[in-house]
Image 1 (cartoon, helix red, strand yellow):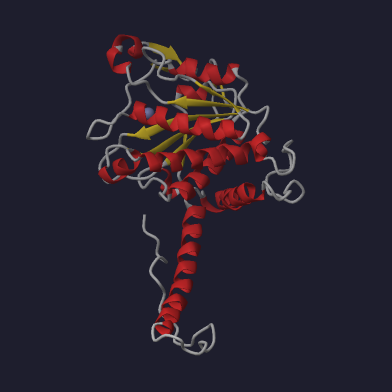
Image 2 (cartoon, protein in one colour):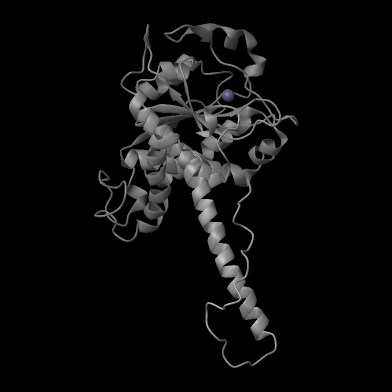
Length: 327
Ligand code: ZN
């Protein structure tokens, strides 16, 4: 990710800070000149960063409007927690949190995190290949997932991000449940993953993944449920709120990680709608998937294998969820 404005801009010889004070050192004037040059450069860099982060999850004209509040509201929510933003804060109108208490703001909210795949699925191929009914058709119970070229598995990645995300959400007061915590020999199957969110009456569910696309294919995308109504699948009531959830997560994920929306699906919006995923088709609560990057691209893999980047990823997802839950 490069930031177009990160290079200091051309130095304006007309010193904006006026004439320098009387010299006390021959170094003082060069220092003042250097500082004067750096300030506009840093400002430009910040503005470019904000602009890139703000459009990373945008979807044309409609989603530009959807993504912008998430970018604006996250810092306000974080910084404003202690300044009584209950009257004016963006996205806090339905919050039952007392002013100044960010920790209690999600009390009573239930979030289910679905760490995609399972690191020991590979030892249970017969079980995970069993077909399950996802309403629109039948699909394998679960899959092994992908890995980086050096062998870091998607399942390890998803569980690590899930743990980081759980800690962030619990700190906000949410009740968090994982569909699996490395405590099962395989799965759960995709239909059960959906049922866990439904049974918990989750206010939001996020299924965490990383993709296995070709080298050079980079970036994240959030997968939204299509409107389906077939067999046990009926997403009609959750398509709208899921889209809102997905847009918020996409915007905050782009900003928090500094990564771009996928360059191979979603036409640069970071949003993809699918009707072939059991985990989405069978959900009766707002739910999205996020493909955090492409494990098979070496540049994306360098990010996905970094603990610091995974923390940024978890923070971006968390901020999107928090914005969604606060309405
Ligand atoms: Zn996956």
